[in-house]
Length: 340
Image (tube, rainbow, N blue to C red; front, side):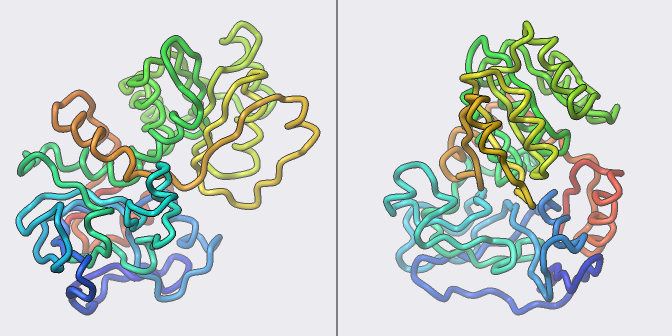
């Protein structure tokens, strides 16, 4: 089969890889219908994370081809959405709602790689969720978004305690940040502030529910958010970038007693203890337990109540994956969908 392999910074290749097979009775093999490039894929692509012959891709939807003898919840022919972390969904961490840190967890990126034609999914019962039927083609991008970026934005909103009547600020206008805006709207937020300097992303943020746009950054950005929230700061802030600047922007934009949900993959982030002490903000986040939210998100998409697939603004065949990475790296695309 064909699959994407990152050989080093900027070196994306589509190569022949070994076809996956059932290795354990809890496995499933799926035919990938759609995959995509994630903002987190850009860290190794840019050389910020080490990468050598890395199997790329962790967002995926597809059709089950084979199952192991112990698989009970999906069957051949089912259309499925899977999380970007393999989980058994039965360990004490999973049953507490944090499947992304399952005791048997495996990150799909690097170890499995779903920017490919097929994939072996361990612990299929705990990782894959079947859709109610075969989806219409126009639903596939939205279902693909649920595999990571929608679930991550949703977790950012949940971790930030977004709820009815609250004010929310979203730091980051990439796909995850935009999904955070969508989630905040669905969870009933009254004021949703998207921090963005890009017209196309501002437009999409407004479609997803943003009530205000803030282009300023740093202290000016904090002051603008306070200006929009009665001088107090937002009740809830979603941090969706992962840099020192974005994390401090989030913390400083939150009112005392408010909540920060951080879901950007942190790189060299250091927090000042004294600032946290007097900030009186709650911090919660990390790799999103997407599996917790998949049934609800799939149903919302199936019922056409949300359309997160709008976040894909470039579609390419798998063989042109390198172009997709370059487009996202140069911010010419928000998110790239790949069709095997």
